[in-house]
Length: 152
Length: 84
Image (cartoon, rainbow over all chains, first blue to last red; front, top):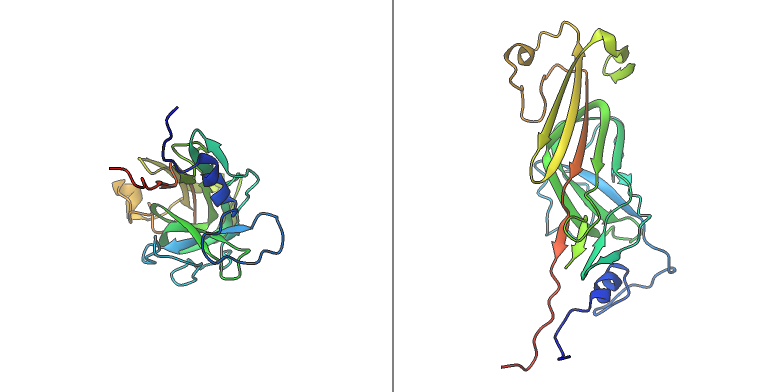
């Protein structure tokens, strides 16, 4: 079989697991996975690819909502689906009994273990408000086409 | 069933309930609003939402469930070295 250039599939998962450090890295306290959180942002917040860390500017505020958002459940480790590395939190993000009167349309998924709260991804949806109610953000199917985080 | 509202807990039989669904390439979203039974909100008469992100501006409860259809993707490409 002829040789072929490739980004090795397992390396995509290894990247997700922090096993490569092609630049300066950090001293980790152990081998356990990091904790992640999900923060909601106002329509006017300008969150996106330029984000590097969690930022409270433009974050929603209101009764029942704590700055920084809610903890994400990450029971399922990154995996390979074909040649695509995939990761999706294993439970919905649920903001219970909140009042968020100003329209919001984005969630920042970020590393709560890192000292700087490194940003990982931003996901958008239609503008919403919540009044004395619950906002639930359910994750997409964890497969090669839809997973929340994919390296193809 | 008791509903948490801005006026305190209320039995849903005493409230006016409005529900909606949005389904597009990005999400499937369902929402529910409760108003007082005799809510004077114009939206109830016209059927047109008061705002794009809510139905009746005088609601006393609104909950939303968004299901994302797709996350984000990074394309990993290895450089082709030395080939012509």
